[in-house]
Length: 148
Image (cartoon, rainbow, N blue to C red):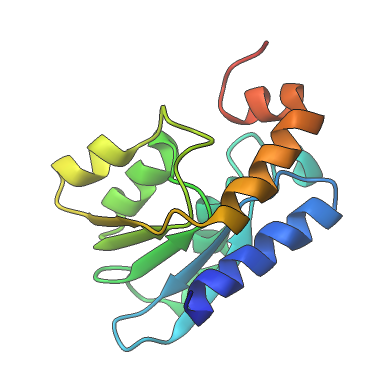
């Protein structure tokens, strides 16, 4: 596992410590520089759109004049909203920790639009989110837009 996925996992763990959903992200430029990190803050900020990838892009702010050609790391395969953000801002590669815990994701959208997607299938990422889902099913279903 490289330093960028480690940064995303650190964000996920920090989110869990805050009582949030343990999903993290990191944005890397074409030169391999870490531009920003972020974590799912939907619970903490009471903001339905503050997923990890969106928070990461928000945190990049004016540090990145253009996201075109950058790589997004995420501990979980992005949802349709976050996949759309990657598409909208020209991110060309998305590397994910896992895709088992959320299978109704934005993978097909990204692939259809030429975004390279790599799933690392990391046990650590799977276990971190699975434990949260088991303990907090209503928070999880709210995060993915399903009230159960």
